[in-house]
Image 1 (cartoon, rainbow, N blue to C red):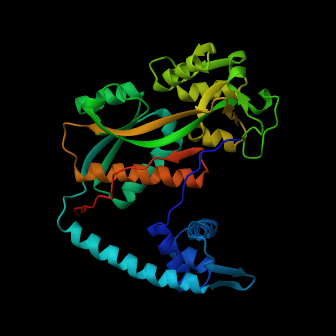
Image 2 (image 1 turned 90 degrees about the horizontal axis):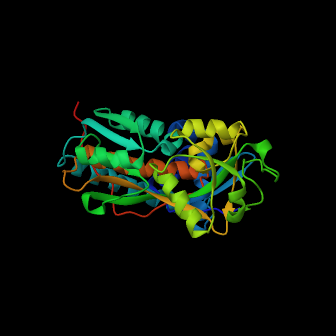
Image 3 (image 1 turned 180 degrees about the vertical axis):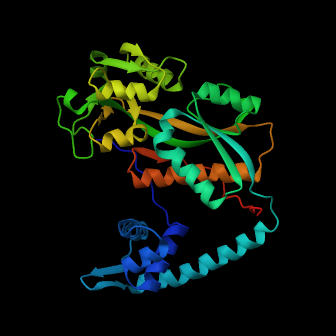
Length: 336
């Protein structure tokens, strides 16, 4: 099974988790202080240890004990976090306010893993920003950005690169989606087939896809042409929910990214089969108008989109890679 690896770097969040662990002396107490689940804390500490290739915590029957390396990193981490807080406090006094309405256009495939966490994050951390999220096709989102109806969009295709400012967000692997009982191969506990399917095999399967108005369909057609295939499209439905419903009923197959079907995969209603020879990938972009000024609130939401996407890739082990970018975290102040 192929997977796009997501590199892990030391993050400020991981440092804060290690510091809490050093201060509280147990995973349960640290998790309570951080208001997170114990498995999440343990997972982040394990990732931090893997990132720096050092043992930071010794776990035993009577609790945890910090290693010398762990104590050193915790102490230096405390200094780093304090310095960053001081810098951010200073800069916030010189920046604009984080407030006002902001519209975001997202493709339907982003909804299952991005929309709700994004709204929750902004409502909690920046309550004066009033989000409006609309789901639409890439072409519609770009039109709305041009007209000013939408401030920020996430799209899969950009027809006129001169009109927009854009940066890559995610590169996702595309899978064949099937009902578990509609596939002859063995399905693993995670919902992924243990044996991939060749691109050549796809032409034999009845497919339900979106129309060519969708960027995803155009990607699928380009893949088919490059592989010298003719896909057997039995129906076109411009609704992700209805396509997924048809596949779960074993009426057809489709081609889809992991993040778009998290719930169905977890419930055992859907299985994903990796495609090889070649592997299918697609890249999404964060887009805004090149001619309109960028508000501090807009920059903050762009940053939040990227951060949440990265967290979701890690949390759900998505078959995706968060692309490098030039955006740094913007700062601003909420007006009470």
